[in-house]
Length: 163
Image (cartoon, rainbow, N blue to C red; front, side, top):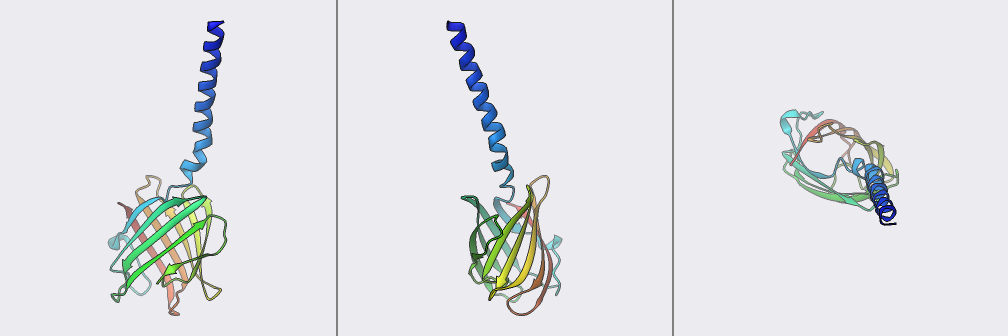
């Protein structure tokens, strides 16, 4: 009887570990972008040749999505601070603050390391971004194309290092 209880207990523990490992995998994979990212100006390229002076993205989990806070200084010295909370469902969410990319954002997860972000300004698509976290999870590369809120063309490659 004791042996039977012991075997059942071990089996239940093994099953619980299996569920945690397999069940936790999608969650672990879905948060590759979570962290604090600092702009690496030397590796970044901007259409007008004049990128921001500095930028930091702080990304944290929020429900089924993320909360992102962006702080920086644009090339002309304008201090930028904006944030948003969004799921990966392609639905519009408000961009709060002074983003040059728009007033709404929608996120769609492409795979475990890639997100498409689409911003809108006044209901119209403004900038489309592809966020890619490197396989070693040390670099976040954001490719941006479109037209910003000032009517200027955007064709940028922004490279961020994990802090």
